[in-house]
Amino acid sequence: MKDAAKLFAYFFAVVIGGALLAPPLFWSARSVSPFFAKFDFEDFFHRALLICAIAFVWPLLRSLRLHSLRDLQLDRNREAVRDAIAGFLLASLPLLICAFVLIATRILILKTVLPWSPVLGVVGAAIAVPLIEELFFRGLLLGILLRDLRPILATLITSAFFAILHFLKPPGDTNDVVTWFSGFRSIANSFAHFADPMMVLALFATLFLIGWILADARLRTRSLFLPIGLHSGWILVAGVVGKLTRRSITMLPWLGTNLLTGLLPLLLGLITWALMIVWLRYANRSHT
Image 1 (tube, rainbow, N blue to C red):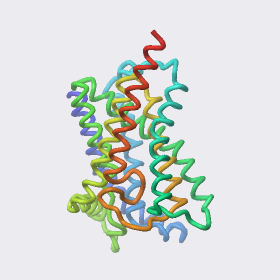
Image 2 (cartoon, rainbow, N blue to C red):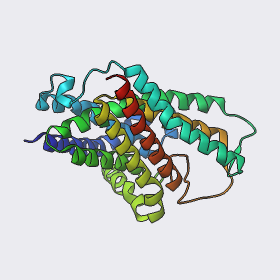
Image 3 (cartoon, rainbow, N blue to C red):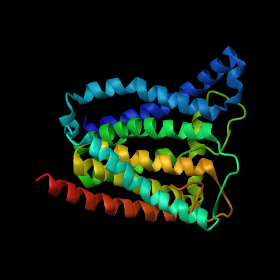
Image 4 (cartoon, rainbow, N blue to C red):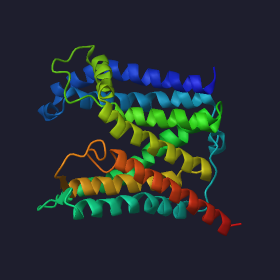
């Protein structure tokens, strides 16, 4: 079986396994403690998917016979710190400039009470999420696809999958009565956003571009440190600005619920991409 086929079999097993595991996980947690009553079924569905993703990854790796980073077309990066810092700055500075403009024009309004606890949560997410997602999407997923496919096709599939997973979110608690089939209903409900052309334009397109930029950074450096820095910069600035401000007007499709949603963030992503390419040419020239 080709590596790509094994990979898609893994994803299928994760989705079906998560759908089957979510109901008993929900029932068990609710019976153990009333603490879990505040979590709806969709929270347990997402946790079930994560459990299955972790449980099935070891059989996947064994079937692929991965022995080193070179098997995933990754090299040791002697400029790891430099690339991570550069990526963080390249992603965060355009967003910061945009945030200052939006605040100055009163599109975003600073809150009178600053929620420092949620801000600290954003900082934690800006550290943990890029590490996890870059290892999975640009490290494992893209690396496996590159063994069978041309880079542009592997990048296309990885970016689309990255966007779809972040785009597919059920609209609230869509499973009031939990049955053995509730996990499969959650899968179906996750596609509801595709019925809204404005959401597709404002969110999916931006997520796809972000995924492509991160994959391109990985391919150009044969390392994950530049995409980790980029990912961290986007999460930190968008998250902190989102916690410290409130929206005065709706601007779809130009700006959605945060600084990573809409056509304006799409433009900022293109600016970051161009700056990244220019910086890499300068950095590579200075080391030759």
